[in-house]
Image (cartoon, rainbow, N blue to C red; front, side):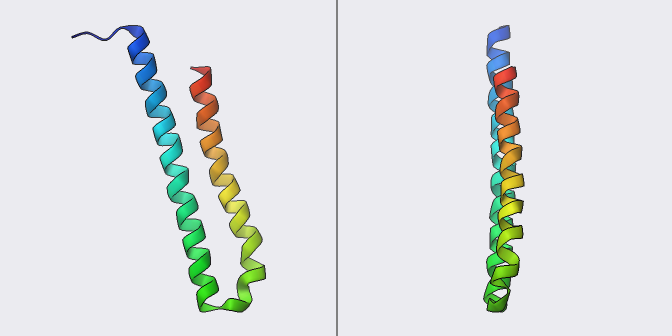
Length: 74
């Protein structure tokens, strides 16, 4: 069974969006988990950790958006 060009293109798109979606999901999970662990150990640090945690999650989510843009340009 041979694959035509359209099938290969579709497979490349699926792989790009899968990798581009899984990696940021793990990164956001780790960022939030570590922030919650830190807040649990030191509740007074909530104000200091909240904004950097949100920025880190936003930057990780931007990677997923970049992969989506790549998929649409393929």
